[in-house]
Image 1 (cartoon, rainbow, N blue to C red):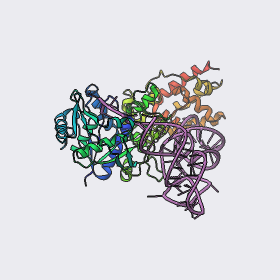
Image 2 (image 1 turned 60 degrees about the horizontal axis):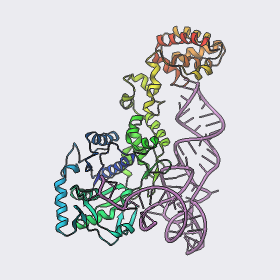
Image 3 (image 1 turned 135 degrees about the horizontal axis):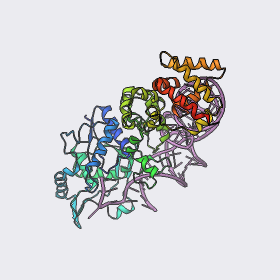
Image 4 (image 1 turned 90 degrees about the vertical axis):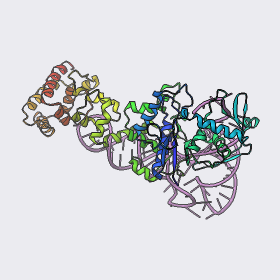
Length: 441
RNA sequence: GGCCCCAUCGUCUAGAGGCCUAGGACAUCAGAUUCUCAAUCUGGGUACACGGGUUCGAAUCCCGUUGGGGCCGCCA
C-alpha cells in the first residue's frame, strides 16, 4: 500500500503554528512510511487569496525543512494543486451527485442529502467516535455544497480533492472531528471508501484559550503565527523539535533529538488525545540548546539576517554560546564594530566605582602593550600576573576591564574577547576607560 | 442550548491493574563551579480534578460530576 497524506492550508496571509504542527505530523508520517506528502492550496476564498499569502505558506514550510512531493512549484500526477484551478472537477462531481439523486437545488444553492443515521468515525487517534445529528442539524440535516454564486464550499471540495488525489490518511486538527461524518457521507455518496482519519489535538495558548492569529491580545496573536518565530530568531531545527513534542513523545525521556530519529519513531496511534498548551519558555530553552550545538557554518547562515552585515565569523563564533534568540545578536556584537558603544550604568557603578579603577586600567594597558603574541592565553597570564603583583583579586581587574572594552557586565570569555578585539582597540579603550571612570567615584 | 473530544507537577510529558511512597524535561528554589552573564553540576518543593463503582489490588477499567477544548455557516 502506498501512503498518501496531504497538508491543505488556506492562504490567509499567515501560517498558524497549529497548522505548522499539522503539516509537520503529515510530513513525518509520509517520511516514516515512505509515502507521499502532498501540498494542496485551498484557495477557494478568492478574497483572501493573494500571491503573498501563497509565499507565506511555501516559505514557512521550507523554513522548517518540510519538503512536499506533490504540489505548487512541483506538480504531480493529481494536479492542479490549487483549488481555484479545479472548478471543472468540482462541477463534474456535483453533477454526479445530482444525477444520482443525492444532491438537489434550493434557493440557487446545491445541497447534499445528508444521511440521517449516525455515522461512526474510526479515528486512528481518537478511536471510534459516533456522532449523531444534533438538535440543530436534525431540523435540516442537508447541507450546502455549492453556494448560490456557483462556488463549491469547503466540505465538498476537500472531500473531492482527497478522493481525486487518492489520499489514504487525513491527518488534521481535531476541530474537524465533528465535521468528519459529513465527509464520510460524501465519500459514500460517491461510492468511494473514505480515507483513514487521524485527528490531532489542538495547541492552546498558555492560558488554555484557542490560539488565534487575529486575537485582540497582540502577544497571543504573535504566538499563533510562524512568522513570529522566524523574526525573533528561533532556529528552524528547534521550532520543529519543540512542535514534535506537543502531542507526541519518543517515550524514553529524550527531548532534544535529531529529526531523522523522530522520523524513525513517529506513528499515529501513539499521539496523545488531549490538547497541549504552547510553552514559549521551553521553546526558548530549546532554541538556546540548538544554537550552542550548531556548527559555526550553519550558525553564520542563520545569523546573517540579524547581523546587519556585521558577519565577522570570529565575533559570531564568540557570542554563539551566549545567544538564545538570534534577534539578540546586535546587542551582543555591537561593541566589536564601533567605539561608540553604550555603557551600562549599573555595570559601571558595580565594577568601576573603586578609586583604584583608573590606575588599574592604566597599569593593565601598559602590561598588555608589552605583550608579544596577542592571544587569549597570553592575555590571561599577563592579567593574572598583574593582579598578583598588585595583591588584588583577578576579578578586580577583570570586571573593570570588561566594562571598559565592552560597556557591559555580561559577555563572552574576557580573554577571547580581548583577543578578537585586537591590541589597538583594547589599549585605547582601557585608557579611555581610565579617564571615564575617574569621575565615577 | 445540542452533540463530540479530553483530564498525571505551573507547563510539555512517561505511565497501557501490582515494577508508582508516580519517572523525565522546562520553569522555580537552594547550593557548587566560573572572569561576568549564560552554560554546567548537585539537591529541594510541586501532580494522578472530584465522587462512586469493578478488583485481592486502579493514575491505569466503568459510571457520574466538575472543568477545558471543539463542532453545529451559502468561512476554511
